[in-house]
Image (cartoon, rainbow, N blue to C red; front, side, top):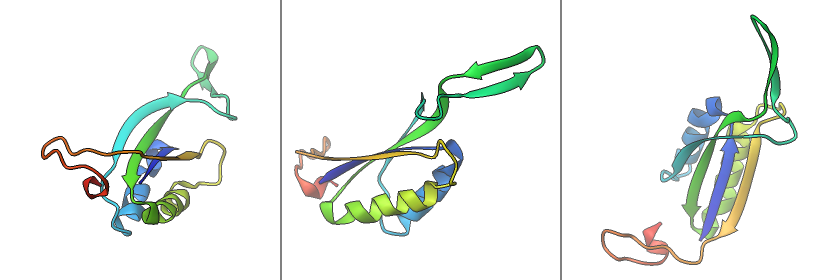
Length: 112
């Protein structure tokens, strides 16, 4: 099993969710986060002058999937989240050693 963590623009969530659902990937956790990368924040103009926002709002999507579905999920996220502008986000993939369903005590890949 693999865990995919994708940090994306807020406005791309619906497109990413739809792209994943088209490949049968429905389970995910979405968290509102803020951060910065190469973009290093943005400068905004307001009534009293210019100010800098260092940490921009993003969404983090977490998915645990079977190894066979990992490449499809990553590709779907990449295509749906891409705008071509700096700040589109990042995707991280890591192995999952174990999974447990709390309700039944079930373990292993059947949990996913």
